[in-house]
Length: 114
Image (cartoon, rainbow, N blue to C red; front, side, top):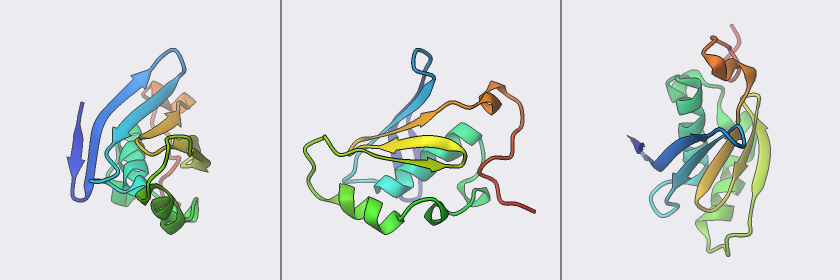
């Protein structure tokens, strides 16, 4: 499955049952690493990205984008907790772990507090 939106293109998005993770592939020439993280989490949480807490509250967005904007040899990985999930970003993928709320129940993680 491919996901597209303004400034966001995920080449693919799948759940990997063996590792209990979601894997989203992106092209860093078309989509920034931070936008790939946002698109991945929005897809997992089934929410509009504007309903999530801003990404900069969890990670330094400018540094993340600068790191992957340049040429990497594929060995660079950044891991952080975002929206209650461990999220790892590489130069072409976002990997997010599954949580108990992924069974279809309606959790509020990653959503702003009232």
